[in-house]
Length: 288
Ligand SMILES: NC(=O)c1ccc[n+]([C@@H]2O[C@H](COP(=O)([O-])OP(=O)(O)OC[C@H]3O[C@@H](n4cnc5c(N)ncnc54)[C@H](OP(=O)(O)O)[C@@H]3O)[C@@H](O)[C@H]2O)c1
Image (cartoon, rainbow, N blue to C red):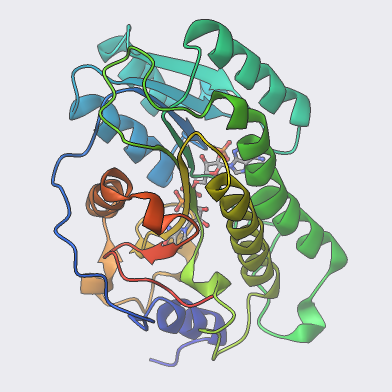
């Protein structure tokens, strides 16, 4: 069957092209206690992070943020099961006051954060945002929307949570450094871009990468250790990838459970040498 250029781009950009191999024995434990915030938790990969952090740890506290908490049936069910350890908060990336309100609420309730995961992201929205197959289809509105949601929002979240990012804090964390992990995508790699297409999404993820790298340099100069990393989850079966899955071989289409298990292994094993790195789901570094 003939593949559209968009589908071709999606498959090829998720191929295992790597800069170097990280040979590391990843811990199988998927949580290290403490206070974790998952931003973009209503569904998809973000929701699965919340679920695994709660299910696999009996002491960690999880703050799940999303635009519309009452619409996330998944989070509502989890709240029934983990009443004391799950807190759900409204946060829309495009509304900075909602980010500030979350930071204030977390400060008042927990005093600090040991782990922050930016799991939100947009690729396509019916009638609003279409991944471009050619320059002729590039629109200012798509570029701005992708940039605002995929790059500006996550960095503002890191900015407002920064004063809270610390180790310790009496919630049983075993982390040696606070960790900030943002979900990027291999297609955000400029060095890995051999197929073109998806201008808005690619550029917004490249911007997220550069902003996060810049933040990591500043974090590295501070006394309190914070490790800031970017993660590519693989091609994962979620609403985001649904329209582009047709030509993805089954063995390359990961379940949310598998991808998040791999990503948590990376997150739980990072140290200060990993600050500012861009990792794929299997622990391999991706070129910028
Ligand atoms: N799935 C893949 O194959 C794949 C591959 C590479 C990278 N990624 C990256 O992985 C991350 C998670 O993707 P996914 O597959 O889980 O996508 P998804 O299932 O479509 O979920 C996207 C999440 O982002 C949230 N979001 C969107 N706009 C938001 C806003 N303005 N404020 C707050 N939250 C907002 C959504 O919330 P609502 O429910 O409110 O819309 C939803 O929780 C994204 O950064 C994506 O780019 C995914």
